[in-house]
Amino acid sequence: MLQVFGDEYTEYLTKNEYEDLMVSVLGNYVGIGIYMAQTTDGNIIILFPIEGSPAEEAGLQSGDIIEKINGEDCSDMTIDKASNKIKGEEGTEVELEILRDEETIIKKVTRRKIEIKYIDSSVINTNIGYIKLISFDQGSAEAFKEHLNALKEKNIKSLIIDLRDNGGGIVEEAISIAELFVPRGNIIMKSYDKDNKESVIKSSNVNPETMKIVVLINENSASASEIFTAAIKDNNIGKIVGKTTFGKGVMQEVIGMKSGGALKITIEEFMTPNGDKINKEGIKPDIEIDEDEYNEKDIQLEEAIKILK
Image (cartoon, rainbow, N blue to C red; front, side):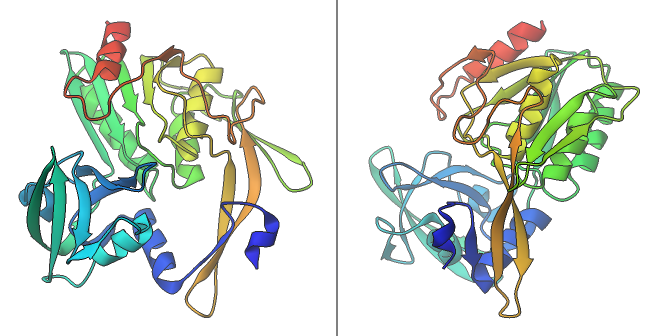
């Protein structure tokens, strides 16, 4: 029924799909702890295992292709179906058949409760701060502030914000983080409802961060990541390095139903502070660097360090 809208993001979520969505927002679930993606040819590929997870302990690696789950072939399986089959009751085991460098490997992994570590930080080259944000989950703005303050105590002079493979999340969290850097009165985001009525969100921060910033993006940086990136770019606060973003410039509202499922309905389109379209366009970096995601040498990060030095 919802297909009549002709909107790829408006959909009905079953009870299980709705629960999975809440897991991604709240940050914990029972499983093995991997981030996955589906390639254009249909392969289910591991982006990376979560630090300290059963997947990491079992030796699963970035670039591993999942060919079978408990003996069931994955060639015609959607990523959502694969995810549901990998998750399960705590203490139970899942068997994965993995293709790695043309070699087939069998991995048996015991499921347990996974606390998603969606943010991490470190100091690079003595005085460059680095924050990796995997998604804009509930509480991510507060966590970002804590990590930034900890880095400032270590006397960082500049900052790299890594949003590569960050598919978005809660828009308000992205706006709150952007407000740390955008001066009071400057526009963070513009949005338009179905009647094309414009809403403008401006920063209220009278004391924004002034350190030099580089934001890393790629083709998997989407939605809330694009809101943040556009706020930094259009307000000339930092340089954007990497590849053009995904181009998801619309917001959804999720409405729970008595069945336990939910409706996810597109309610607004958002634009950059300059009024540029994001949906199906993406945000182009200031410095474009095409990089093999599984190359051991991170040339996008190296470029960011070069700029800040």
